[in-house]
Image (cartoon, rainbow, N blue to C red; front, side, top):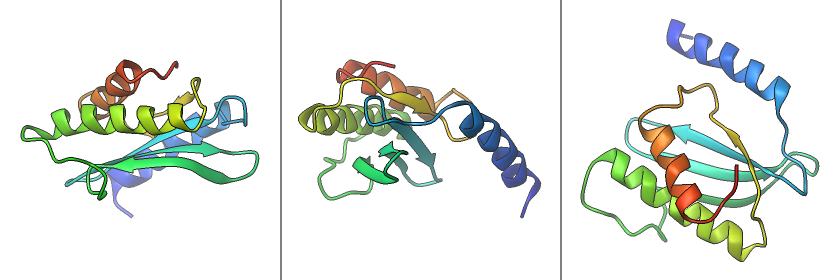
Length: 117
């Protein structure tokens, strides 16, 4: 494993030690790859993914623009699906990434979509 990945794993473990998603307030987890960005809303008590969205999924309408623009759209999509599932409040899990760039864009898109965190 490379130095960057092991560093992110260390940070991720520290974050996950402090926060956990419950049934009342599930966890919004973000994964960022070079091509796409993924978001899941997870209930850690039952260990189930309630809602998910990504920039590569079929229900995502591809928007022309930068990867940050796509992140905002994915944030809005996951928020729309969460509200349809009856979820309004979540805990944000940045998954070891810095709260900057695409991760921040996704979070802002989710807030615009109506999620509270």
